[in-house]
Image (tube, rainbow, N blue to C red; front, side, top):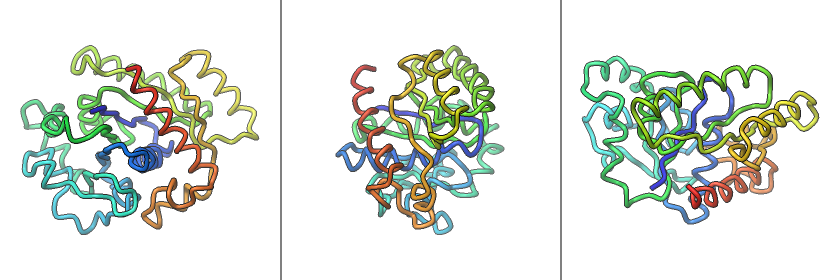
Length: 255
């Protein structure tokens, strides 16, 4: 079982879009996939076709030890992958978890009994370096960082890399950066190409070859509760995420 946190403390960089589309593309490739929604906004849950308002159990109960993964998980009706959903309840989990022992290991311990059940577990982390994100990083074997090729993205990247180094040193020796994924790429913008070249120069083969372009069809898909790779399979964005899933399957063979 390969567990990957999709993380970036900057908001609006396509974390949820990446997580949902990668999960759907992996599932379509025959990989047994679980998506864990760790964001109280529950966007990955809604984007997977599950109504977050009607949940009886969610990742909130799992983190607090009130339900098992089996009791809380559901299946995405559109993406055909398993989902550990989230809703607003999760916002309260941060406060309640502060009192708990091994509070940063709650997700890791919940996933541990299911090692043989999945090929991939993808964790959609919230856009902050919070206790929820820490749970995601402590449970994961690696981090996938989606980022836009713009100036401010580079600024935030150094903070994230430092956080990953600290978690690696103190809490999770398995944690490493699996790769950086360039998303929402505008081929017409010179700055985008400059930042992209800078990333390749600095991170080398850690930068995924796949580049996900800006794509209106990907942006429309969540409102229908359908992953973009299935909403319009011929769209450039959908094809990019399908290529990214293939690249991920190949990359894990070398990990």
